[in-house]
Amino acid sequence: MSKSYKARTKSGKAFEAELLNTFRAYKQRLGDSFWFHRIPDSYDYARNWCPKCKKGFVNNFLSIRNPSDLVLVYDGEPIFVEAKSSISSRYRLEWVKPHQISSLIEIKRAGGHGFFFISYRASLMSKRHPTEVRIYDNNKMWAVSPEYLKGKVDEGTASLSWLEIASNGIEILRAGNVWEIDTLLRRVVETP
Image 1 (cartoon, one colour):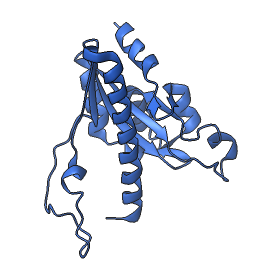
Image 2 (cartoon, one colour):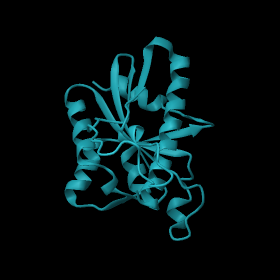
Image 3 (cartoon, helix red, strand yellow):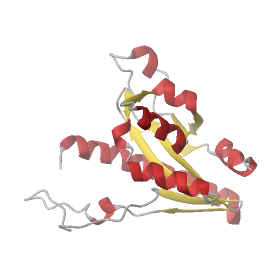
Image 4 (cartoon, rainbow, N blue to C red):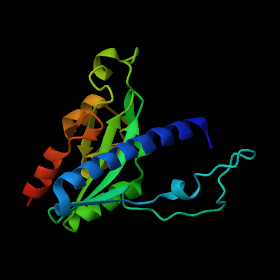
């Protein structure tokens, strides 16, 4: 397993943990009108690494392709969330898998809701891109539609700037350890 993959996985799992903490707080606040579940992925089954061979204890494991990382229900509306994060100055679209886009689009066609939650994880200002990255200092994420990302992938776009993501997503701010998803929840309920 490459060092860069481990770093991306570590960053991604930290972001998923933040989302789970957020959803727990919303469950406590909203009660029966809010439910959530984290969908296990292949990393969950192979995360115990042998210190000698540096491989997972589960060899030759084939995982199913899950529709998303998380699912929640708010006021009867199912919402599927694929959590993505990056420490790079641009978000590379190779990190979005085709089955993730197609699953979320199919969920939306069936009457559900699907979003990519994309978070910028670097807390220090980039020396190469100081004006663009300075604004996004680990306290913002965006809910981005799968249709937007599909369009960009179909165009052959390799990566998106954080300004492009901010312009085409629903901004979600963080207050302490909790992401404020109220705006997103209101839009989901109000969407016909």
